Length: 142
Image 1 (tube, rainbow, N blue to C red):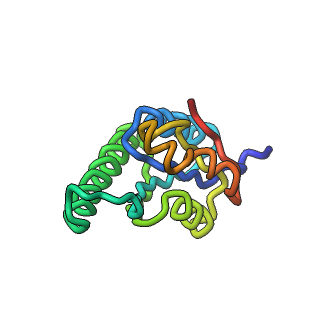
Image 2 (image 1 turned 135 degrees about the vertical axis):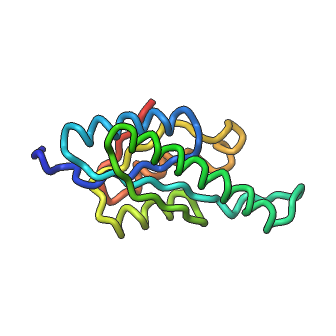
């Protein structure tokens, strides 16, 4: 491993304590490797919601995602770290993988858990899927 190993680090966020831990760990890499951080929040569009109409549902999730990204970017800026941010819609794992390839990321730092247990059962573990299919290294933070 060389000093330039992790120039670009992608951190998927979902508002969970695990994604916050992943962001903290990614900051350690910034200090050690002079890395760039890229933040992503993905709105999962395939979960069926009957209580709200689709447009209202997506609007709520966009606001939540923007809030999470802005909060995380502010946290980083207080540490003197700048970050690119992306709000995407689609399949969570696919969008993370597409952005990692597009931005030529060297590392994805992801929380071990994020969604509630029922959603994880239905969707499968996002961190597990990323670790199995990512084109770059993956660090899963517990």
